[in-house]
Image 1 (cartoon, rainbow, N blue to C red):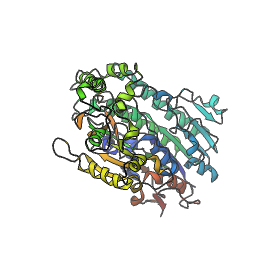
Image 2: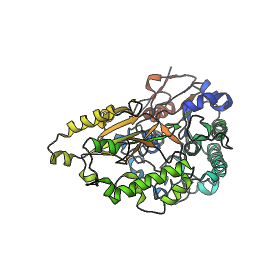
Image 3: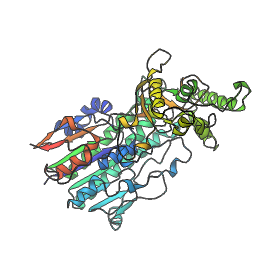
Image 4: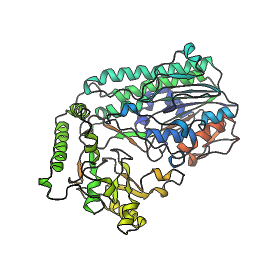
Length: 496
């Protein structure tokens, strides 16, 4: 029987990784022994729904976990997800049901850990709490490091210390997992390193000369390159602990690139075309709401130009009403709209439009007709240069058909990567993103898959999918004969 080591690296991007492979001996050796390439992400390419899909083989409309993280929210550190949607349904739970021993460390969201056939250790994501282990008695034997998601939101002056702390934490998670692998029996070992995503978000602009906020000289120019070397060391530590005869998978939930530098004011597009109602009934210049919203936008854009985004972030957190201003609730009454830009995708290029069936009925307009009109409106949107803003726009049922599909907005879309969704109205359709310096890296729909050594295994390239990870792990553990029906995309490795 084969053993499997799965190393999840949140946010690793193939387009970034591939040119670095010559200086990353452990990752390049793994790719050379089998496969290295891009792993297409699910929609939306966000960590929470993506990792749950990887854990279970279920698409987001099937598992229903669609939460996303907005780093600018005042209450972000109280963020939590109910694990009932996937607890007991993961590939490591299924491996235990097949009699396999597992070691599971730091799976995103899976906190507190639950009893498994082996060892599970995890930590909280933002919310208060400490690293926990199942069985609890092992905690004193192995002394786990801090586990979980992002806990820091550094200012520019704190970035150097943040990077060093992040390197230390990453090595600590890898070393802890390696100790478990050497000290406990196992057939499947799974660890997630969540820290590259943090680094991409905060350091992207320092290594991207095409980013409009790229500083010509910076001590952080090689921060991301150096962090990939740390990750390579961690992979080497884990592969060495696994020993010979173990199939290793390194994979990510999504990729990373330059975060949107422009905002597309989607609610303004809907307003101009009669789908969204402004709270300003008369002349704009006589409306206090208009002047408050305008002052906010001028302040944010001024602080952006002056490289004072850290100040805007700190000030915004002092006022509880700033979130309403950001989302546009201050300027429109959602209940009165036929269609409204959803908060589903945050300020990213991907997102959705919510359509009110109640308002459709009140106005005597067919819901499906409105959906067709919205899709046509999005696909017809142009920027100042006359280029299409949206790459695609579709009904949610065209992407997914699971029991939770109605948790998605009625219309889904993907814009060109330089655009992010904004909710402002009474503004030009395209404006700058005044918070790009603060978080300059953003998610893109393309991650990483490295698999090897594949002696005796054939890669079914046409089947490579995040939804196939769970079945692939179980197929390798079972020497190619998957004993239980797959939940998702099917195994992309098979015996030959």
